[in-house]
Length: 116
Image (tube, rainbow, N blue to C red; front, side):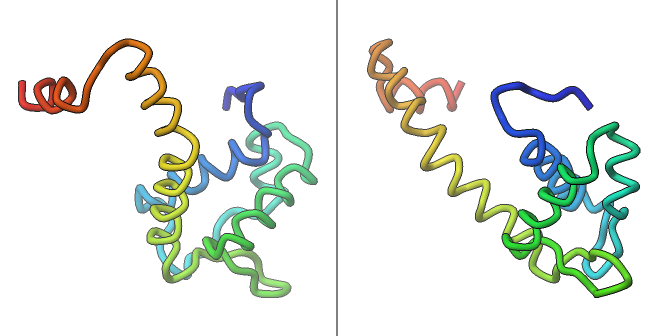
């Protein structure tokens, strides 16, 4: 995995794991690879992966069965979609609208491009 210096590694790993859940690679209530397995496969510090797992658990995407491992939550896909939508609206869309304004692109221009 190639890491982007603009975003913390643990969040990049969380994004990749979320994509795998969305793609159906890990089903609801299925055990995901352990912290050590993920750290080994990505060549990162296990503490970084633990931070990823904590983030995903706090977001309700995965849950922990003590002594057994981490599993995909029942509503993981819905939570991932909600988080991605929230991020898009609060982080990406304002920049997008700013660029549109700067370039003189209107909503009607976008509608026309969509219809083409």
